[in-house]
Image (cartoon, rainbow, N blue to C red):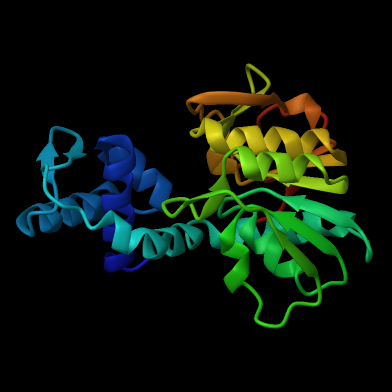
Length: 253
């Protein structure tokens, strides 16, 4: 990831979290702490943030988040992109031509959307990330309406939930912020989107969770489902051998 993309990610993270931890951001971006430290120093000199011990926080000024939301999401899609694509390719093997599928939001699901848009299937989603994936899709794409959240590129709210309840799916593909193996739960950060996840899962004959191994033992704000609720959990193979539930399907990076 180039410096400008890292800067966008850092500023977006500060907007969402208030304070960021240098070590955590380095892990999320797959780069060194020294690189992130230099990025923070540069952004502080530009007046974009204030460095604190171990990280950074907002300086109270304008962070241009409205203008940079799309760029920040694009940058996030590049994080662990090869891993996300490998997981998506394996998960797509469950889908047959003519199937109706629900696709969750998030950058772990977007590569799967790009694959399925090239096939003769019906896709229902609330994520606008799919709109730019394929110019001339073979798939029928149904976009849920509702209140638009530009920071996450999704439609949410009562209207979206009511529309979703009327559909039935062969498959639902779900993303998450992280999973706890000890608790057997998957987590997310936003309750509005998790309501839609749960409706999509409830109305599907088969459910799949997609993640890369950086999300293992990573807890978010809201635990929305048990890992046992999924037919398969598609995950890249961790570097260290760990005990995983029986429904995990490991994918080679």
